[in-house]
Image (cartoon, rainbow, N blue to C red; front, side, top):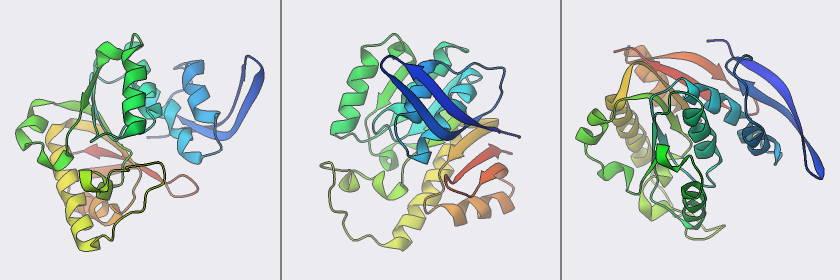
Length: 228
């Protein structure tokens, strides 16, 4: 897979926005201004993935997302579904004040019919649910240690509890195994590595997945394809 890296600029009422770069799958798939706004309204390099997620979503029939947060990646994929195959997005997140606000905003838009918020602890969702929800695309925008509700942010800048790294690594593998149950053969998984790097490379060696794209600079992300 060859991705395109472009500089981003956009004129909106009363202001002009720019960002160093963003990622795209195909220059022939137009990215809506609203997604570009998500991309360049802050200086964070994390936002440069939104156009890519939009374009991948236009080709997907079903998507699972881990982590809603402020809802920008969620919105980007929902607009991609609306302008593509009009499939469905299941977003798994225990919820917090930001998630509640983001979901309320989504429900007020005409993309709401493509969206389901799975408001649960990821690790309590049975394997059968993942087997029943076959997906073309998975996006992980969540540190696995925060998938458990005891680690969800309670305020804007909470203190995090001490964490056992061994348990985090165990959770990473559980998370990846569960998601593979839902992925169709040749389905794609986009993720920010966080602490799952070891598991990703190990699973690639086991032949479960293949790494089709990896970017290791300012914004680190990996695109994986399910092989079995």
